[in-house]
Structure formats: structure tokens, C-alpha cells
Image (cartoon, rainbow, N blue to C red; front, top):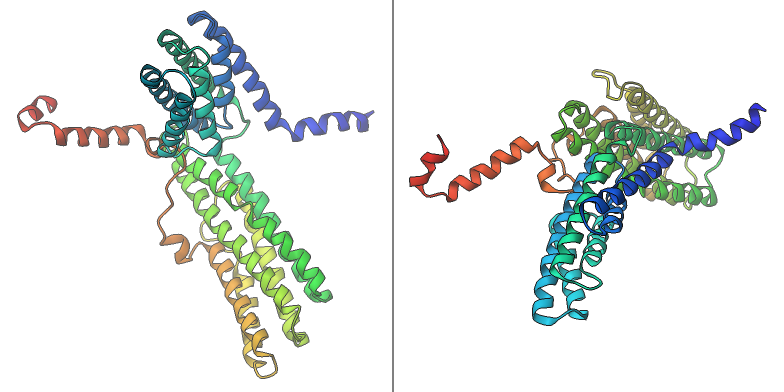
Amino acid sequence: MKVRWGKLIDPVIKRRAWIQRVLVTAIAASLAWIGGNHFVPNGGLVAAIAATLSVRISLNKSISDGFGQLLGTTLGVGTALIAVHFLGFGVSTVFVVVVLSLTASKALRLREVASINVVITAMIVIGPGLAESTAIHRTVSTLIGTVIAIFLSYFANPNTPAGRTVNRITVLAHDSADLLGEMSESVVAGYTPEIAGALLMKARQLVEEIPSLRAQALEARSYAAWVPTARKDEAEDLYERGVALEHMMVQVRTISRTLFDMSFDDELPPLVTEKIAYALSCASLAIAQEAKTIHASQKRLPGVSFASDLRIALSSLAEEFMEGGRKIKVTQYVRGVSLVTNFERIANSLDLDSPAITEVQPEELMGLAMLTVSPLVHGKKIGGKFLRIVPKGLKGRFNR
């Protein structure tokens, strides 16, 4: 009985986040239907569609995409009214609306899905049967649906942006550690081109996950910048750990490619092969330990380094290549030096002392520029720009 019950419950538990988002989207669409019909004549359908399009995995994403959708829709409505006035409703109107909606999405730095949503919503607003009153009703309905979706997006996921970032870092770190462990075992057993090719394919698939890791870390950082309840220091630490993991994943792929090339050339001395396998094992263990620590405490413990054994292993590997330089083929020697460099970069990333992590400025946050900083800070910047264009005789009135 327990086994049957487990087969029914386990799939639901594993898909909890997806199920919760589906239910929240359905509730948002239903409430938007009620609100749209209540405040706007026959506005329920447009409001429900707007709500469905605007519900995102988090409040931050929903506000970014929803606000951009509203701006794009407003632009589409205004453009359509002008186009109809001069050109009449037809292909030219549709062309102008699509072009300007996509342009507005690009200016607001919305991602591909959100950009398409802007166009869809604008097309819903303008047709069929465009009239000024109809356009206004549909714009208001879109506003109602989007606002409801933004509010309910807070409940769309059982975890916070920081929590999702921790989970993403943990999963990808364990995947990287497991892949390095497989490489270590394969080197000891005999690294044939077939085995090396299979592991290289896994490494390529691992690197393809970097954009999702980066987007999640950026979301947590952006969310903490303007939500008072979020811990900004934790988000900054997770962002830095995400960048470090991204560098390590790239090195894992490079190591896999180097070992793949080595498998086609002359065999290395047994002691060198043993040193490479040991360095791979140490790197795997260090990344796995770091992932467990981050998952347990949701932050990096100060003063704790898991790269000490890895540094010892790569130092021993470097010495072995230097001592056996004359016995090793030049191409294999160069690849061995490359492996040492890759391991050193992994160690530096684990300790967060790589200049590529500490000295390079953080990339611009995804989403709307106005949501990358606190609203108060953004308001002060806008106020400062406004005062610059105010005549000197009037500035005194604003300072009172």
C-alpha cells in the first residue's frame, strides 16, 4: 500500500513548483476575468489573457515583464489609433504595431518570451474592430489582468529567488563534481577516444546550463536591490558564487576537451596518468564539498577553503610534467601544462580569489533598468536630472 501511495505522491512532490505555478496562473486568470467584467464592459477575456501572460516564476520577473507589457501595449494602442486615423485598419497598422512593440521591448530589455507577449497583447487590444473606446477598454482590461498577475506571482513559486539560486548552484556544482569524478575513474581505467568523446559531450551539455545559472543569480541580486525583506549581502554572495561556478564549469569543459585530445596521442607515463586522475578526483571532491556547504548555509563560510588538497595535487602534477618533459611528447606536454592551469583556475574560483571574479565589474542586471536599484535611489536620480533642466529662478521653489 505504501509503495502504491508513494508512486502517486512522489511525482506530485517532485513537480510541486510547477503545480503551484499552474494553480496560481489559473487563479490569476479567473480573478482577472471577474475583475475585467466588473470594471470594463466585456473586459474579462482580455484581462484573463493578460494575467495568464504576465504570471512569472517570481514577483520580480512578473513586475519587470508585466510593467514592460503595459508600456508596450500602451504604445501599441497609441500607434494603432494614429495609424488607423491616417491609413485605416489593415496590414499597415499590424506592421507598425508589431515593429514598435518589439522596439519597445528591446528598449526595455525584456527577454524573448516577454517581447512576444507584448506583441500578442498589443494585437489583442487593437483588433478586431478598432475604435477609440474599444482600445481604451482593452487597455484597462490589460491593466487589470497584469496587476492581478503581478500580485499573485508572489505565490507562484514555493521558494525565494535566493533559495532558487542556492538550489541551482548546488545542482550544477554536483553535476560538475560528478563529471570530474567520471573523468578520474576513466583515466585510471584507460582513457580511450570513445570514453573521452562521451564525457566531452556531457561537459558540453553542462556548459549549456550556464545561461540559466546566470539568469537566476541576477534575479536574486535584482530582487534584493529593491525588496526590503531580502538580504542584499546574501544575494551579492550568491551572485559571486554563481560567477565562480560558471568559471569552474567552463574549466571542466576545457579539461574534458584536453583529455579528449590526449586520448588520440601517445600514451603518457603511468605516474603522470596517476597524477592527472588524482587531480581530477581532488577537484571533484572540492567542488562537491563547496556545494554541500552552500546548500546547508545558503552562503560561503568565511575562512574555509576546500581547494587545499587540489592545490597540492596540481603542484605535484606540474612537477611530474616538468621532470618528465624529455620523455613526454611536446603536444602532450603542452596539454599537461594546460590541465595544470585549468585546475589552478578551479582552485582560485573555489577560494574566490581570482581577479576574473573579484576585479571584473558585475554585468548589468536583467530586466528593466529601473528595477535594478532601489526605487528611492532611482527616484533621486530622476529628481536630479529634472532639476538640471529647471531654470535657476525656479529651482528655489523645488528646494523649499
